[in-house]
Amino acid sequence: MPRIAFLGPPGTFTEEALLTQPDLAEADLVPMRSMPDVLAAAQAGDTDLGFVALENSIEGTVNVTLDSLIFDNDLLIRREVVLPVSLALLAPPGTAIGDIERVVSFPHATAQCRRWFARHLPGVTLVASNSTAEAAEAVGHDRPPGTAAVGTILAAKLYGLDVLAPSIGDHPDNATRFVLVARGGIPPATGHDKTSIVCFQSADRPGNLHAILGQFAARNINLTKLESRPTKRGLGNYCFVIDLEGHVDDEVVADCLRDLHSQLADLKFLGSYPAAGEHGPGIRRDADAAWKAADAWIDDIRTRILPPGEPGTAAPPG
Image (cartoon, rainbow, N blue to C red; front, side, top):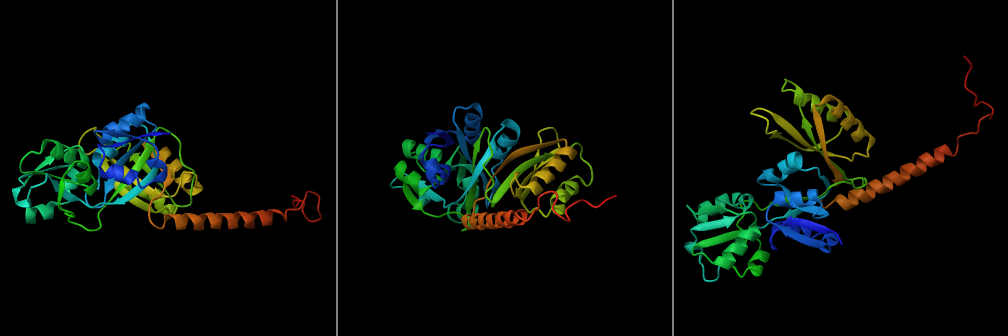
């Protein structure tokens, strides 16, 4: 049974997303205090896999995760999981919304509720925690007066809290993208895949990004994400993080990465993995059927190849 590190304690959105995957839910789940701790455990071999939040549809990239993958670890993404997120305001029994002076939670979570706080709790003090569940656990255990947490309804049940408001997010279509990472190994191509890379420039020159993007445009490869991150080597020094459609086992993707590697100062490969999405299984079935049909078509043509010496098969002279 594999060991999987995830952001704990129990009751986080990370755990909720992990449990949507039947094969992962059966594993030995190991809660960690922070996402860098999750990645470090997977890198060191203390666990077989790590499961972390990478991107939110409202707040964007979880920078601490992305930077840890780029600069601190040598891990590959094996799967992505997208989870709809609903944030709740949690407090000890007997607490009213008007009593709340402090709200504790993971900064990405409280940032997704700015407008709700402005309307219902103007002037409230926001306190950062390592996770939504850690915030709920602390409020449930210590019961500090005038303090609430932002987290999951599951966390309210786990830590003896009341749900003061069940849905306080500013945007209804809130979702978070999680990734499963491991030290090595690339899942086989499925027909509906993503590849993630990091491009490092040799020098900051006009047209650098255009030259990189031109490699994808020339091959009609669609990009699903493009962002820059500081390289930690000084102001103005950035790398480009790119998600693209396709798998490194696809010849067109491999050819593109080969050219980029030859031109850039460095190209870090973060993985090729099955793409998430409600239509993913159908796309993969259609791709599989199309490849089988194409294989049958090629096999039929090859059966018509004549053996050497058949009349009219010799190469023309000269």
